[in-house]
Length: 159
Image 1 (cartoon, rainbow, N blue to C red):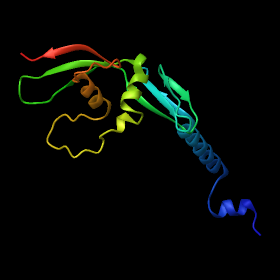
Image 2 (image 1 turned 60 degrees about the horizontal axis):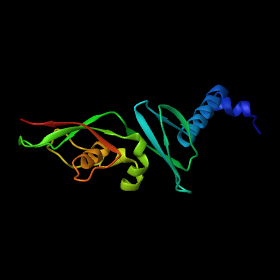
Image 3 (image 1 turned 180 degrees about the vertical axis):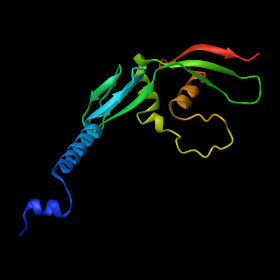
Image 4 (image 1 turned 180 degrees about the horizontal axis):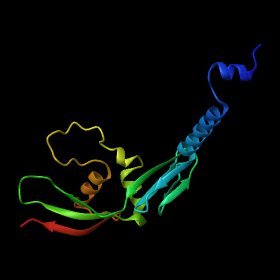
């Protein structure tokens, strides 16, 4: 029976390549299962799938979580939302997600990956498509009821 060296030489494999491949696979597995990264302008909302417990990950940086904890990110920078139309009778608003009221947002909207909402869209012909969190904030900004998790910073009226 041939030795390990004969097999590695025959198939032109080298030990350093195998070791570096294993290290890469282990590091990728660790990253996918146990780490998530939030930008300084994002809030991460984490939810334990088994217990249903939810918490916020404030501030940017790396966060360790269990593999059964899902994290969805919300951009906290102000964003302009409006009704796109060729008419001149509509307005735009500058809105911002209120990070202190994330629990109220979860109770109203539910937990999911809000960024993924409406990613596959067959809405051709428009220069701007509303998708994900921007679309959700636009809906709450133009609602008759005021929600604590959205702050309207400024309203732009067309003349």
